[in-house]
Length: 155
Image: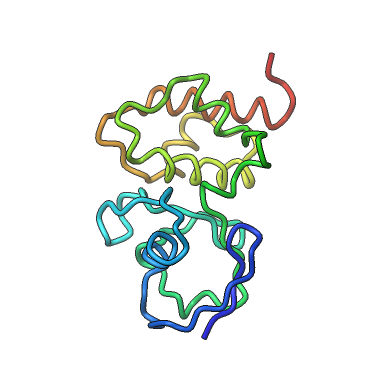
C-alpha cells in the first residue's frame, strides 16, 4: 500500500487501493478544503497538488500515490504567511459562494509555477475549474495580481 506525504507529513495508507484521494483527505485526514463537486474530475472543486501538479482528487485512486507528495489548500501557505494566490484572492474579492475557491486557488498556484505571467487567454485555456457564481472576471484579475506578487512587482 502507498506511503505518501501530505502537506509535509508522511503517511502510510493501508485501506482500499481504489479509494479516491479526496475521501482519504476529507474523511481520514480531516482536511476539508478540497470539496466534492461532480465526482468525475470535471468541475475542479477537489483540486490538490500531486508532485506539484494540479490534480482532481476525486478521480485519483490511493493506489496511484506511492511516494507522491500531496499538497492541499491547508498546506499551501507558509504558516501564517499566505501564498501569493491566496493574498490575491482576498485582495480581488474573488469568492462569491466560495465552494469552488479552494480548487480554483490550487489550480492557479500550479499554473503560476509553469507560467509566471499568464495572459487572459492562457488563464482561460489552462484553468478548467468551474465556478457556478461566474466570478471569472475577478478570478482573472486575481491571477494577474498573484503573478505580480510572486514576481515582486506588486505595489
